[in-house]
Each structure stands twice: as C-alpha cells, then as structure tokens.
Amino acid sequence: MAGFLDRAKEQAQRGLTQGKQKLDEVQAQRAGADLLKRLGAAYYAERHGSGSPEATQQALQALDSHVAANGDAFLRS
Image 1 (cartoon, rainbow, N blue to C red):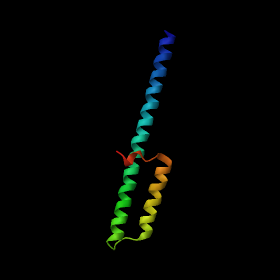
Image 2 (cartoon, helix red, strand yellow; image 1 turned 135 degrees about the vertical axis):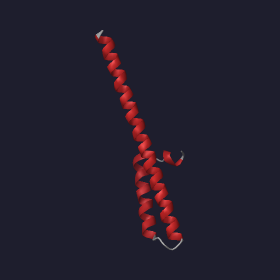
Image 3 (cartoon, rainbow, N blue to C red; image 1 turned 30 degrees about the vertical axis):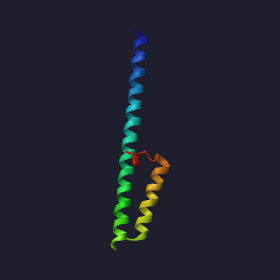
Image 4 (cartoon, rainbow, N blue to C red; image 1 turned 90 degrees about the vertical axis):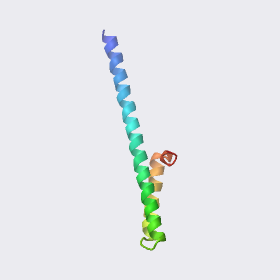
C-alpha cells in the first residue's frame, strides 16, 4: 500500500510541476505580447508626432530583455 501512495504522490507532484511550468509559459507569452503591443504603440506615436524616439527605444529594450530571458515563442503564437 505504501508503494502505491508513493507513486500517487510522485504523479501528483509531477502534475503540479508541469502545471506550474505551463502557467509560467503562458504568463511569459502574455507579458511578451504586452511588450510588443507597447512597442507598436510607441512607434506609432513617434511616427505621428506625439511620441519620442526615447520612448520607442525604451519599449524596444524592454522587449529585447524579455526575449533574452524567455525566448521569442510569443512572436509565433
């Protein structure tokens, strides 16, 4: 009986770990999409005279940092 409980506990732990990994991936994709949206808005504002090159550069740097830390999978989804 103890072996069964140990296996069940291991499976539950694996399920929790996989669930957390998937949640982290989804959150990273959402954050990346938000940063990409901010970059687009900054560029649009700059091109139409209400934004600044500095704001666009800051948005680009934030996006680059996110890609370096989390990859660019959000660009393909």
